[in-house]
Length: 437
Image (cartoon, rainbow, N blue to C red; front, side):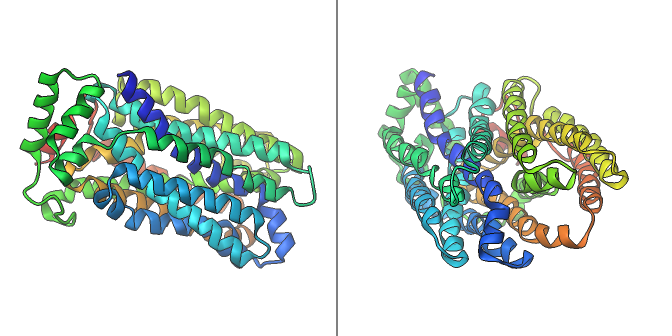
């Protein structure tokens, strides 16, 4: 178990880089729009959402290297993309080059949202799988907090402080790239793609299994394997997991989470806070996110995925309703700050803790990477569209209209959780596959 924990934490550093890269742009948002004098639509497309369009491409096509090259080699590719993007975007001198380099980092993020949950799910024991896969989400929110704090500390340090905000992520990116060389390949991938029984058996034993338990695990995997390791995902027999992955990923972004993460300083400014208070409150968003993600991590294998989603959905509805009311009535900045914190807590304990675990669990071994790609690409297409359109929406609509829309979407999520979402805690991946068929 010690080795599994170490490997899970190592590959989940990709989540830290994911979170840092996602949130760090918020500190440079208004600076870059003023520097390059871009319109709201151009700013949203080139500066704010370019990384997210990269995540869409990475999520759509990341299943290919994940299946063909292996989980480990794909993780190495991600590390290279992160390093190049961090250094390049910090040195960019116009919005077009900046957009390209941010896009490259986004491709790495999109691929990581496929390979990391798939890898950890494939090495984790059933009773600890929720916590171990959710380590990825913990690292994401830790990265978001680190980005907000980094932005706060770097802000005002120089005329080009935004370059340091973006460039600092090259340091953890290089560390991740070095560490990932030490993790083994997924034993399930070795069996399904290479038919390398001995190598898979050796890794199971390194994971803490006895030789007999390793042989039993291999037998169960072989019994559940498809006759075609590269079979297509879009088949009638996979309709239920496809629907579940699509809906949970859609609702994740229709909650407004990326809107708040990307535009937190702007939201707090609209609520009446000054610039310094807005950045500090954004750091508070990251802190709350981290604390409640840890709570979700502790509860996901005890209460289960569905229960956490139910708690989170109710929390969404309460917090978004009050934020909508506060902007509509002008109730005051601190009301908005408090209920944005409550919204973040609801997200962290619900969708944040569950989404990557759930999507990684519900697809069979033969199409897991493809299913992860479907869920991740759905997530990132919504995220990119929201981030692209929000600058224009904020100039055309009042904040209460935007938050009111997200409130309505979370009412639909609550219905999805109650009537459609199954519970997957405590089951082996193979037994979950059997349940759907």
